[in-house]
Each structure stands twice: as structure tokens, then as C-alpha cells.
Length: 197
Image 1 (spheres, helix red, strand yellow):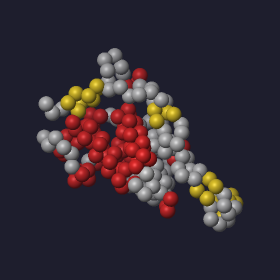
Image 2: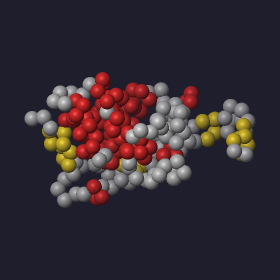
Image 3: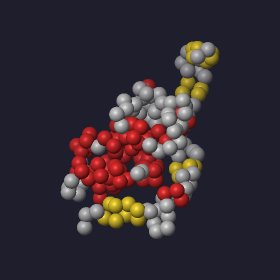
Image 4: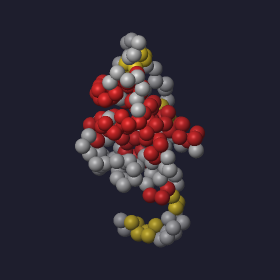
């Protein structure tokens, strides 16, 4: 259980640092935390833009692209399709997060789409289900979310991040390795400059 949580947390943070338009989220974190060096869990409810960033990471890069397999308990008809008892099926969270019928500009990283939006990833909005939904949803959804938010906010608060000289954002390889979890093909190389000296 801890290994699964560690890998998916790392993947989320890696994609977040890759995709993040850091200045907006960083400014929000620093305005809330101020000159304190350590972020507190009680700061998280005030970080609205950071929460939108995390939702967008989960939408575009769910750490587990295909959710835990499901099996129908009884025969049912959905949209005219007959699904027999004991049918096994897989939910592709990666494809759902990139569905153009649900999302405008689905392949573009836009945290602003969640500002003022009621859509959440807790299993009630089926266009965003990185943790699954219903009885088979991830039991660590709260722990995982807080861990990612705290870690990302602390990284943004403690350091100023830049790409190495001569590298542009467009040069970053965002190719995904498809598997049980979805890592990036190439490592992210960034320069971290301490904010507090």
C-alpha cells in the first residue's frame, strides 16, 4: 500500500513540475505562507489555484491511467448495450481526462479550467476519476491529495525553479511510458535556487 502511494505521489509531482506554470501558483503559495519557511496543512484550504493545478495534473496525467478492473455483479443494460453478469471491464482514466466531449482543449494543461468549477476528483464527477469511483475507489484519496498538495506547495515556496540555460519549455519531452503507472520517458532536469538564504 505504501509503495503504491509513493510511486503515484512521485509521478504526480513529476508531471506537476513538468507542466506547471509556476509563477502563478508560486505567488499564491508565497502570499498565503509569507515568510514562514514551512508550509502547514492548515494553509492548504487557502491555496485555490494550487488545488486547480493538482486537479489539472490528475486530469491530464493520472498516475494510474487504467483503474483497477471491475466486474459486473448482475446483468444490466447501459445505453442499449447488454452487459452480462461477471463481465470484466477496465476504466481508462487517461482517455476520460482527454475526452473532447467533456473538456475544451483536452490536451492542453490549463489549471484555470478548474477555477470556480465544482468538478472534483472524489468520484462524483465521472469526467475526472483518477482515484476511481464508488466502492472500488482508492482508499487513500485524502492522504494522497494532501501529500501532493503539501509537497508541491513546499517546493514552490522554498525554491525558485528554472530550466537549465538554453532549454525552453517547448523542449521538454512529455512522452509517457504506458504501464500500471504512467511515468515520463525522460527525466526532468530543472535548476532549484533556494528562496530563503
